[in-house]
Image (cartoon, rainbow, N blue to C red; front, side, top):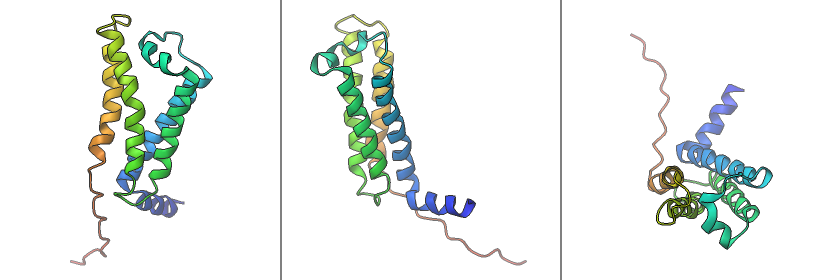
Length: 143
């Protein structure tokens, strides 16, 4: 079992592992928006003028599933997954930011804007990372 987990981790790599985590979070967040919508939607006022929350939840899930699929692609071909997660977080970050200032509808909007912005920004940073080389396994030296 351990050997299978190690092979899986090697196949996925660090970039794929990050995309797997981001994709899982995005998919579950989208599902949560559909299954149990938040009662306080003041920070989402601009987004909800464009589409209903169910559609936004579906968009989160699509972005998350795209990231999960792209996690298994070779490095440098996985970029659509990173962009999908970034693309869904950006409107949420901007909506919360606008609800805080200039609209003044949601006093804590700045915090949510930073959280969603940082969640998406990690993807923009990671998209340029090289996959670190695999460590060579050498037999132990006898002394």
